[in-house]
Amino acid sequence: MGDLNRTNDQLMSAIRGALEEEKVPQWKWKLKSFVIASLLAGCILTFLHWIWPDAVTHQILTATSCVWLLLLIALSLYFKPQPRLEVRGFWSTWTWGRLLMGMTLISLLQIAVCPDLAALSNLPNYLSSLTEPMTQTFMNWGGMSLCMFFCGLIFSGLAAGLVFLTVREAIAYAPKKYFLGIFAVMLLGQSPVILLQTMDAHARLHLPYWLMGSLTALLTILFLFRQMRFEKTN
Amino acid sequence: MDESSDEALMQAYASGDARSFQTLFTRYEKRLRSFFFRRLSGARQNAVEDLFQITWLKIHQARKKFDSEQRFGSWAFTIAVNTIRDHVREARWKYESVSDHLEETASTDESSQSVLQWVDRQFLEEALKKLQDGPREILILSDIEGFSSSEIAKMKNKSDSAVRQILVRARLRLKEFAKLNQGESKKNHG
Image: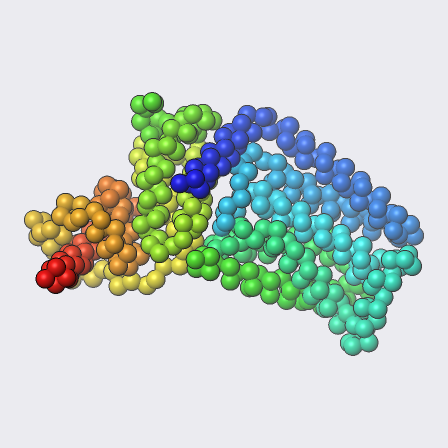
């Protein structure tokens, strides 16, 4: 009985909260999203410029603009008035917002850890030691194409796994119709990386391999998490 | 205690009135929970709670689309039925496709009456578990929740005649269970 009362209290509180949030004028929470997205994008631009002071400026600006746009969308979905309650199997706009935000930030991590992926100039020595052994191994196996495939597989797989762990409650027995949307959001989150690759003629040639690796990873993770169905929770 | 109709409360809730929402919630909380519990027989309480919460969140999301011409109860239970359909894989059951050649049952027959009129409530809870998902859901909506066959037809996206046929068969099944149960009781008590 205590559990039922707690559920009722949580639900009523969440819905009452949503009704209160709706009383705030729309422009206020949109402004909040804009300000936070801009501040974050500013920090990211500073960070990227610090890592690659010699990088071509328009590449950094393009990546940051893309990230800013994605963060703006994600934060708008997050701050939109709605019940703030995590329920297994329920996808609200703030769940989509969190998913997109997570994927965008992990894209940034991909660019920071492996600039070859985005055809940016070499990392400073203290950071390149992280990726050099792995890059060399893949290059020895099958050249640039295989390297890009494994890059997509590893980074997108890690990203997908991490994000799904964050929204696993919503994934549990979620309707199948949401999986295409989840997949689209994950690809959208990867768009800064894809954009940077398309901007470089050499990287563009190997983009299909990176996409194949990413798709393989995303579909594998999606398939694994689809198994967390209603029957499994019984 | 607010004596306003469900539809009036829903209109107020759609406009942002939290107290109207609270009154509606209090009125329908037990009914919806019981519906999920009976419908998902064998499910853990967690699953029932999840679907209960999802239904209310969906009601909240769709509140501005509520048409005051329709009954709130019917609308809310449609959302509940759709929530179950979306989230639970239903077993295939024989009553899904109803043949046009089925014989009409006489209206004075027990199978046209609500099961609550001729079956013990405690036995009903046990017997419902023995029915397949589809007929169980329709029987609960009709005989326990009190919805008409046309309302249920709308919820389930079926024809009125199909729903009535399913109801007839479900009640006949319960009648068989009741007879078996009676026979077993007589045996046990010597």
